[in-house]
Image 1: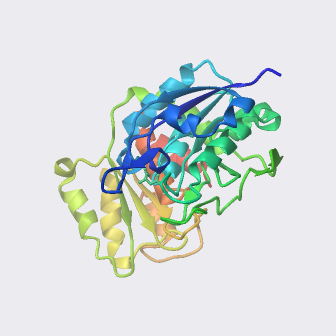
Image 2 (image 1 turned 45 degrees about the vertical axis):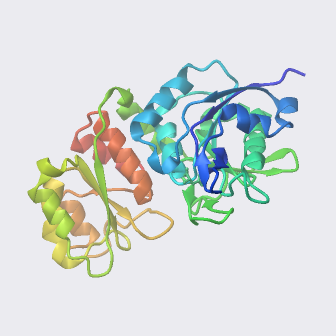
Image 3 (image 1 turned 60 degrees about the horizontal axis):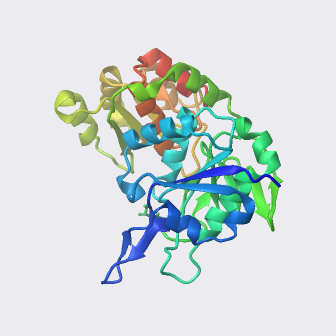
Length: 340
Ligand code: ASP
């Protein structure tokens, strides 16, 4: 049997930690170590391991993911597994999905329990990811599936997966869609194919976004009685602060406290400002139900960009990528609009 050639690219994260003299977990394991810890991989695939970095995903940057995407674009392999930390997996996987255009499986996986604990999940997740990458249904539909995340024997679309718990092993879900497939024994059981029209449109408009420079995007979570001082400061000191765009994690179907309406309107006139839902699962949001100065009808008229079904972290990734690609406000609005 010819085994698929699978490339494992290791970025770091809990999956790659080991204890120091004090017992604290530190980055340390490379791709070779991760592969060596799972002898069963050899029977499934011809594995080539490469350590890209040894950093916690809380310290990854957009630039690193762009470099990683370029590396994946040129790989001669039948599938790619990226191992990284869980903290920003939902963002990194989505950015890879916007950037990588391959017809081979590209899978991101990680671990919630570190290697020094009883029952660490890293080895099982890596084995599952390789199994998924080798599976005939996954390989036949790789382009339609886009970048995937594999955690705890479930396979998620990058645009949909979110981390919903800081410490538990079952920290990842896709609240809007559920998983694309499940791994049972050694079988991948297909459940659905993702709807990727919005991603296809985004990719067409983005072109080669990786040529552009970093574009800081602020993410502002709006809570009960938010006075809006930060938003005011962003308008007044735009050049000093350096943000090039903003995402507002807004209330309900796309609302902000009434006294903030003039503040967010002013901000939207200065910087592309996306409204995204703070409510757990993501959108879609309302467009034409509620009246009043800070409801969706007024905010949309005032020039706020509607984030569609993307939750705020993913909306921020998309806005940064649009700005990096040099897109103007109208095209950015078109890209987000496709997300519903
Ligand atoms: N801080 C770690 C990271 O994201 C946590 C993890 O991997 O679960 O790199």
